Amino acid sequence: MVNANMLQMIAQFKQNPMQIVSSRYNIPQNINQPQDIVQHLLNTGQVSQQQVNTAMQMRNNPQIQNLFR
Image: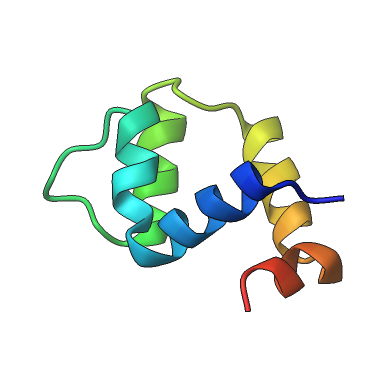
């Protein structure tokens, strides 16, 4: 079950995904393509390949997809 705080976070992410991502990770301003961002995070050790794989699996989950519609 999704709580109100989670729905607020999703709404904020939908409005400005870079603001949410940049609040947690160090991403240079000149990098703005999703693949480049992921590669930068991997190259700098800010995320692991396992974390990327998990995120990709979540992205393909129909329940998660419904939250972002």
